[in-house]
Length: 486
Image (cartoon, rainbow, N blue to C red; front, side, top):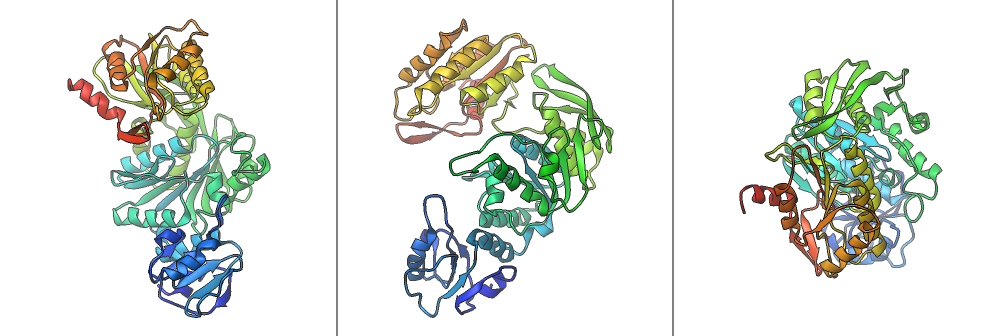
C-alpha cells in the first residue's frame, strides 16, 4: 500500500516528501525491514525517536514522528510529522488492514470490573446463535480455538487491527473487545466505529504511577469509548453512568435492578446443584427472560445483564441468550472443572489477599459443606502478601491446603512457612502438600458431598516458574491426569 493511502485520515505535515510502497507498519525498531514505515511511539520509559536512525539503516522507507530528529534523514526516506504518533499508528493500521471492524459485529466493553466476564458471556451468546466470535482482552486474543497472549488488556492498535483481520480470515462474524481506560487513553482502538459500546461500572482504580493522574482522568478516558459507538448500553445502578456515556451519539440503553432500567433484573437467587454453582434471575423490560448463569456470585447478574444488552442490538434469538449465559465460562476465573462426585472443583486466579477474600466470600454465600482452598504464594515477592493470604484463607476456609506456586528463586518450604505465619493467626485448619499436583490430588481424593474446592493462584496461567525457568503446567491437564490415574 502506498504511504499516502495509509495517511488518508491523519492530520500531518511533510518533512521529507515521498510516497513509497509500504510493506508493513512497524513500531518496534528491532522488527524494521526494507520497505516498512517506522512509527515513533513515546512510552513511559522509552522514546522510539531515539531509534529512528537505526530504523533508516535497517531499510525503513518512511518515518512517522512527533518530535524533531537529531540526525539528517536521507532524502529517499519519507518523513511525516504529526502531533500524536499513537493516534497515527491506529489510523494507519485501520487503513493497512482494510477497515476490518466494518466486516463483522463489534462490541466494546469498558468499566472498572466485569469486562472479562461480560466479554466471555457476550461471545458465548453469539456462538450459541451460530455466529463465530473472537475476543480481545485480559486473557489474550482468542479465536478459532486458540489463544494468543498479549501484554495488555487492550493491545497496541496495530495488533488490534491485525487480530480482527485474522479473525475474519478464520471465519469469525463477530468480535468482542475489552476497552481498558489505558487502551482508550493511548488511542489503541482509535478509528473503529463499534456497533455497541457497553459500560459495566466505575470505581477508584488505576490511579497514580504510569496509569491515570486522578479519578477525573480515569473517568474521562472510559467515556472516550462512547464517541465511537453506534449504540450504547450502561449500568443504571452505577452513579457515574451518565458521565461515562455523555458523548454517546445514540440514546443509551440502561440495565440494572433500578425500576427505571430498560432491561431490569428481578428474582435473583444463588444456584448450587451437583457441582454446578451459579446464579438465577429473570428480566423484564425490553426482554423477558428466565436465566441461569454458570458463574457464581450475585454481581454476575450485572455482567449477564450487560451481555444481554450488548446482543440486544443484533438479531439474536432469546434461546441463544439463555444457552449462552448458562454455558459461558472465563478461563481461570472461578472456572468449574467437571469431575465425578457431588462436589464442586474451581480454578481461580486469586493470587493476593484481596482477590482471595473476594472469591472466598462469594463462595461462602453458597453454604458449602466445606470450603477448601488450595493455594501457594509467589517467590521473590513481599512476604506480607503471604502472611495476608494465609490469614484470609484461614479465616474463610474450612480447610487450607498449602502448596507451591511460582516459587521463582526461593525455596518452596520457606514460602510455605511464611503462609503458615498468617494462617496461625486464625483458627483455620490446614495441611501442607508441597507438590502442586499432589495437593490437587489430595483435595480431590478427600472431597465430600457438597464441598467447594478452590485451586487458587494459577487461574489461566499454564506454567510454573522455578529458578528462572517456566515449566509447562496447566491445572486442567493435572486434573485430567489424576482422574486417569496418572
